[in-house]
Amino acid sequence: MRIGVPKEIKNHEYRVGLIPSSVHELVHHGHEVVVQQGAGLGAGLSDDDYIAAGAKILATADEIFASADMIVKVKEPQADERKKLRPGQILFTYLHLAPDAPQTRDLIDSGAVCIAYETVTAANGSLPLLTPMSEVAGRLAPQMGAHALEKAQGGRGVLLGGVPGVAPAEVVVLGGGVSGTHAATIAIGMGAQVTVVDRSADALKRLSAQFGPAISTVYSTRAAIEELVKRADLVIGTVLIPGAAAPKLITRDMLKTMKPGAVIVDVAIDQGGCTETSHATTHAEPTYVVDGIVHYCVANMPGAVARTSTFALNNATLPFALALANKGWKQALIDDAHLRNGLNVVDGKVTCAPVAQVHGLPYVSAESVLGL
Image (cartoon, rainbow, N blue to C red):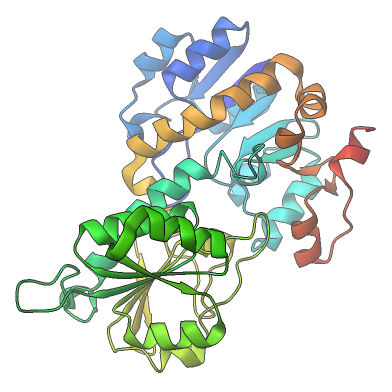
């Protein structure tokens, strides 16, 4: 199979779909890899690194898309990239289709085989290709929130960890999953007073056992969230429903009760955000203010630490990319029900139920597409 790696073109996106060691592995298995010139530079990976691993360098994205059987990316294809897709071509990347009707329609029209990292599952119920970026985004969130709290950035002028004689900031983390746990880890390390909210009793028990008295845990109800956001200096939203739009836990009315200059970091923005007032931003202009509350809603947070993120992502995606290349997409999905859950769109059909539901589109199961 010929695998193509285009340069990412989303605003301030520096990650790359494959690292040289992944290329070497694919070449070792008899596949051909073509990489767009300069695709890895943002992650500190040169064209010579890819050539040494066995890749061929092509000058343009047009050449990559035109010649590859499978496109391996990081972020969802942008409008210009979607025009380059063709029927039967495999697209293996993050898609986040639930909040993105234009992308969904374009992928349907392309006839491509679109497999989303974020809906591939594991035997324990986790999302193994989302997990590494959730870890990165979770660890970045308190760091970005702390910066946004600075007065010069529009925030309250509060130091997250306080100083002797001055109380630390109050941080509320909505969601106790992968991102939420990592956000709590860093916020605690920075000296903040941390509360984690979740509707899973098991998650709350796990967090309490992991962090002990360093955090407070609260069962998620609308009343509890209303009370907590009033006190919060920083709210970090990490809630996730796999494949579906994030629930809106913070309403516009709640903003009016918050401290002026408080900050919301909406890690859930890839799936539409968990605040009614959230809309996606970029690293170029990461924040905006609504009702005196600073919103940080960058949709590709891990791109800020591109090298760490790229290597972490490849550690997770390589086995699946190898399976797709070695077996072809149909056999790979027949053999692995967890990879099959990653199939979102194929041959003009939507095979992810939450995506079909949110956009009012017909749903066809992956099993029926594969004749299972």
